[in-house]
Image 1 (cartoon, rainbow, N blue to C red):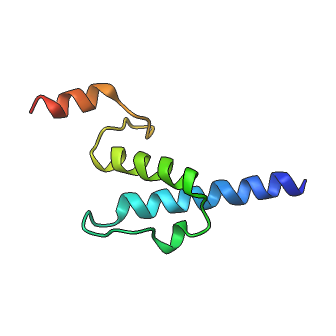
Image 2 (image 1 turned 135 degrees about the vertical axis):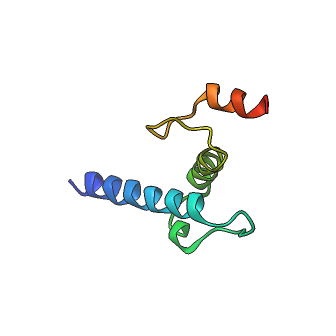
Image 3 (image 1 turned 30 degrees about the horizontal axis):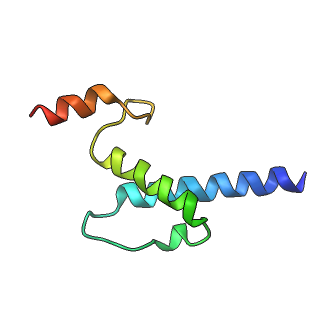
Length: 75
C-alpha cells in the first residue's frame, strides 16, 4: 500500500512539474521549485515533454503529434 501511495505522490509531483515547465516563460532557466523532488532522469523526460508541448507539437490529448511538428516545420 505504501508503494502505491508513493507512486501516486510521484505522479502528482511529475504533473505539477510539467505544468510549471509548460507555463513558464521561455527565458526562465533552471529547475523550478515544483520539480525539486523529481529525479534527474525523470526531470529530463518531463522537460523534453514540456518543450514539445510549448512548441505546439501535441494533439488535443497532450500526446506528441508528428503531423503538427511537420506542419510547423513547413512554415
